[in-house]
Image 1 (tube, rainbow, N blue to C red):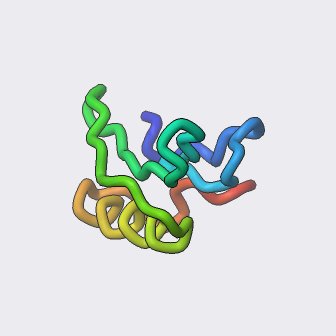
Image 2 (image 1 turned 135 degrees about the vertical axis):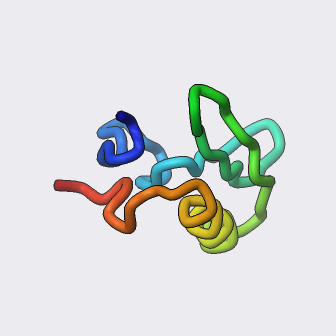
Length: 70
């Protein structure tokens, strides 16, 4: 069950499911559910990427504590 894992220690953004793509120069939001990665979108601002990721977490049934550090 990976839905309740904390954010990875080596995360460059500090947010689960949001990474920075240097080639494009944007923040990429994504979510993994049932073994499949679903790309949410590319955003110039990290706040927009995080908001999009949070919306998808509720859609896929992730717990509100998902990605928080213990």
